Length: 49
Picture 1 (cartoon, rainbow, N blue to C red):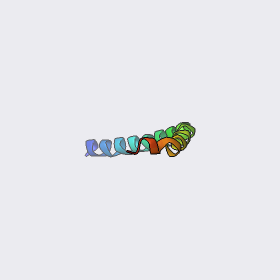
Picture 2: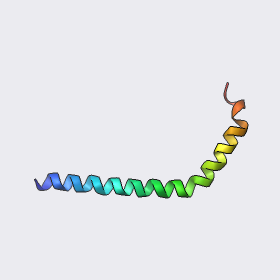
Picture 3: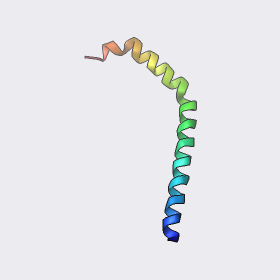
Picture 4: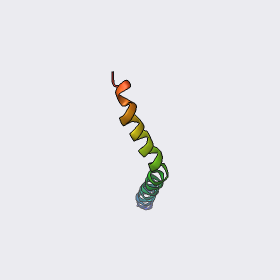
């Protein structure tokens, strides 16, 4: 029973950190993603073959 509670706590802990990490990554890399989206929208038709 202790092991089951430990696994639940661990999964919640990891899920929370994954969400926080995802938020951090999207905030850090959003300008890069924005620039790459513009680049792909502008020059993407060359590679769409």
